Length: 122
Image (cartoon, rainbow, N blue to C red; front, top):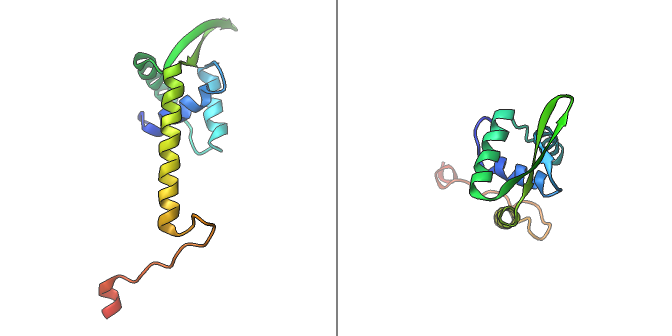
């Protein structure tokens, strides 16, 4: 993902819901939680973390020196938890709407699509 998109924010907030993590840990958590579907670039991660920190959803929670390199740790704030809960509810609503439209909400298969009216007359 080259730009900060809503799903980037969602995955980072989800990774931090498990507790404070440093950048590489967040990248690894996002990749694992998404089953490999979301793979963030380092620049995208830190740009999004900066934005989330500025908005109050995430805060730095310390630094640790490992092998001579500083690791900054980040954690969710209560605002970040509320944002993740809101995004989760919105995703659940979208899924429910799609399932209803497909006729799969009750476990049934997808309804056959009606023929386009122009094709039906041909």
